[in-house]
Image (tube, rainbow, N blue to C red):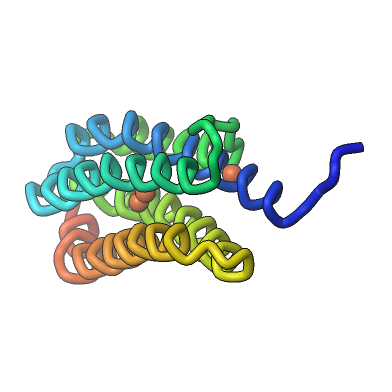
Length: 166
Ligand code: FE
Ligand code: FE
Ligand code: FE
């Protein structure tokens, strides 16, 4: 049996979020197109650009570990994005779709926040200072995105959805 160390757990989880980020980057254009509110589309566009940088940060963390950047299937993000697709399909073209898109996107952000939070704490424990700060930069962006989405939902999107006629 190979030795299962915190370093191994760290690398496995890094591969998990690397898979997730790349999959999210592929899904965002579809979410941008599905958004009815131009503010929501703009928020997704901003986060697509951030996601590109987050992927580069992960590649830097792999490099700091002396590992090749390699993705490992994340069933959690596959499932979260699949649920998002269902909502997009069911409420396509209505103002309600925006409320659903925000909820789906926040499920994604919360998953990412949990991953980056754990990885940053493990990097601290392993004395990997540079990796920890790269991971916290991404954690900060995910948190800010989550908050921006709440503001959009509570500020306009949910109200617009209530007034949608059946
Ligand atoms: Fe991300
Ligand atoms: Fe995962
Ligand atoms: Fe994100």
